[in-house]
Length: 347
Image (cartoon, rainbow, N blue to C red; front, side, top):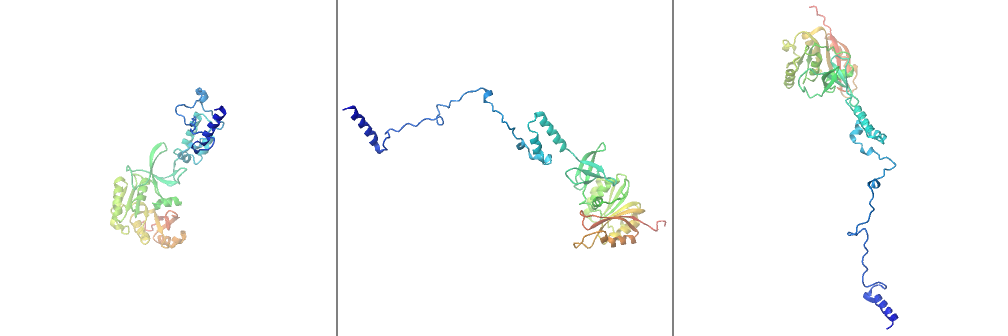
């Protein structure tokens, strides 16, 4: 058999074997081993020196704004991210400088200054509103749950008590612009309708240890609170009696009172203030009364709304000097400061 016939026979067997497609061999072609699937033959990589393998710095500096925390934004007034972006490209020492500036900016910026009223102080800072304070004269840690602030004042470490105008009508009158409350150190004060003693405790801070505050309250629930307060403050005397009957406590309160505060119901206010003034108030002494308008059906209050009450005070020798509305702290109330004019003072 010739060589040509043998080659033709081999070609025909390859084409017709197994019914496969023409031109394909019966033995499958072995899979090609690539670098991706190879296990025994790792990919050849060139080994370079550490200096050559180091990452090249990009031309644009990396932004540091993403590292700024919420605390930094709040402390810098919302501009912390902008300040951080502006400080890009600085060295480590300059970064510490920025932190020091921020710490000074967010430091204790509270400023305590004296009010025009004696014994009252103002707290000013850049976050909260102006707050009234009195300097604490008690050794107790808490009187009625008020906030206390310890700060340097005139070279001394002092503790102050926050006086909220929403919890005290007297504080609301101070915030409303009362010119003079006639409270001094050593003053003798009679407080009618003391309640739980919140305003009484701050008056105790103002008059000091040489002054006295006689707190009259009929309710036994408030009397227990006043008794507890008096145990911590030596210049407070609780009187658990009816303020409309001053003869019941005439032996507990001396007849040398400098100023009377009256926080009583509207129906009993003028009469009770007159009776207590005759029993205890010095001639020429002062009074502070909290008037409440009976008409509160959505009427806008002004000083003319209390004209009838002021007229009754004048008839009882209680001359009003000034009036301050307690809006918005105590809607419907007005603070009246006056002087007691006693015609029979020579008798």
